Amino acid sequence: MTSAPCVGAVLVVDDEEDTRELFRDLLEAHGYQVATAEDGVQALAMVSATPKICLVILDLLMPNMDGFEVLDRLAADPRGSRLVVWVSTSAPDRVPQGIRCLPKPVDIGRLLALVDEHCVNDAVCEPRP
Image (cartoon, rainbow, N blue to C red; front, side, top):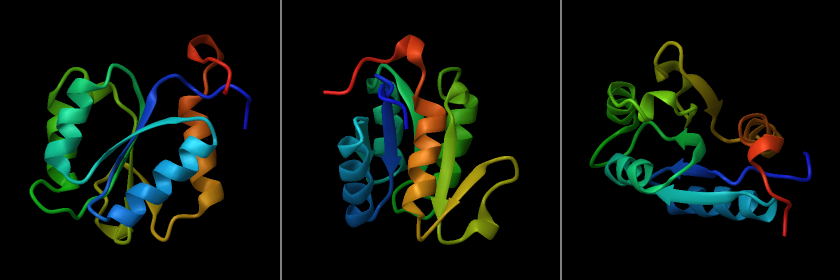
C-alpha cells in the first residue's frame, strides 16, 4: 500500500450491517474515506451526494433495490457509468457478465489490494493522517 490513499470515497453497499461496519472500519484504518449504504436506493442517493467516489463495492442481493437494478441504473447515468464497481457476493455465479467480483467471504488482503488498485492515485491524493 502506498502512503497516500485517494481523497475520493469507497462506497460500500450491503444490507448486512456487520459487513458494512467491517469494511468501513478496515478501510478507514488504512486511511480511506468510506461511505455506506444499506440498499440500492441509498446507494444511488450516495452516488448523487458524494463528490468523488473511487470505487463502489456492491452486494447483489438486498431489499428495496437489489444490486442488479443498481448496476442497470448506474449504467444509464452519465456519472454512474464512469464509476468502478465490484460486486461482493456469496453467489458469484449470478454476477452479470463483465462485472468484476469479490466473492464472499471476502479475503481481506484482496479487498485492500482492490481498493489500492482503484483508489490510490498520487495526482488526487493527500497524505494519511
